[in-house]
Image 1: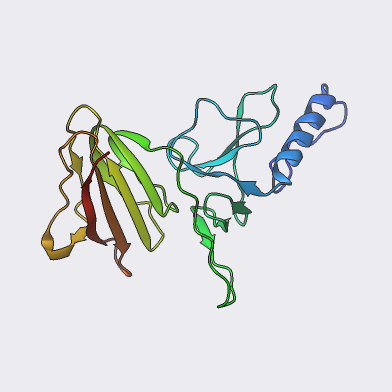
Image 2: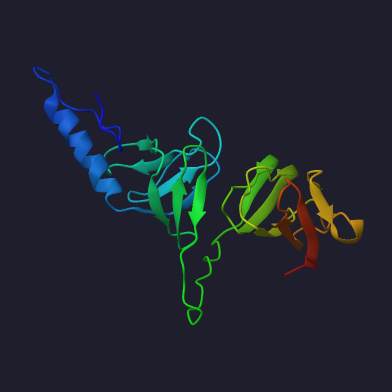
Length: 222
């Protein structure tokens, strides 16, 4: 038997190792009474820092929350139930799991209040082959390790700003999906100069899976 929300094992009469079941339940409660999550992660990580919690957006653990229950343990994966609510530190907003996807919850704010912007990433994310953009990340900072095909099928927010950095010692190609309508039909072509940076912005169209795409700027160099 398991609990309803956290799927924790319940102790039963004459069960052996009840202390293990009890301790595992305490660790789960201790981790998820703090309802904040750090952000989204494309795939299951190889390691985490104790206290960090991320939502996985792809692969076997899609929509699960990865975390370390204790410094003596490895990475665990928490499967949320429909209606699970957390505060996302990455976007400074609440997100709700509806059973299939995570949805951002828009809170009412006073017109006098200044909205809090998501923090700038500390590092570019290196991408190879195919990159599936996460569904709730408004700013992407991507570094081309190789030729890459982009995919935005999971994106649900209205706008995405993408800063793309060319490989430092070679020219890699960037392939955009067909569901982007480019301004003046001018498809973005990645700057071929090594280490150059381009900026592209996408706007999601209502009632369709298409985006409007515009090239903000190109060929920034150190």
